[in-house]
Amino acid sequence: MAKSVKDMVAEASREVPRINQQDAAAMIAEGAVLLDVREPAEITETGKAEGAVTIPRGLLEFRADPASELHNPALDPDKPVILYCAAGGRAALAGKALKDLGYSKVYNLGGFRDWVEGGGERE
Image (cartoon, rainbow, N blue to C red; front, side, top):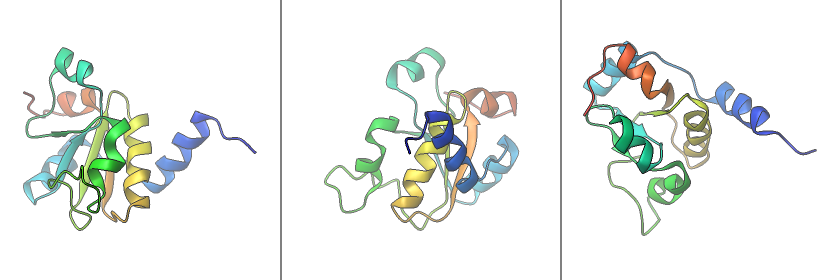
């Protein structure tokens, strides 16, 4: 049976815990990676969370897989990763993809607005 995107996001959200900005900031201070999975045009328009690594959702698996030629060394399956997008749906799907790639400590911050409204700095 085919799934809708709503079903896929709900399934991913069950696997990837949602956290708030304060918890994310504390985890980042301990070495977690903050990952923005929005498209470049979105980041140009709004900025990004201070220190966030930017990888568009469509390239995530290639950048996250240590065996890939396109691997981004900022991503390590042994380090916690906190994802955000515009509202949280892409972050949930991206988090599930990371879990499928062997990342065990993956969290969904939600949207960029959640970071900013929670007091997070942006650049």
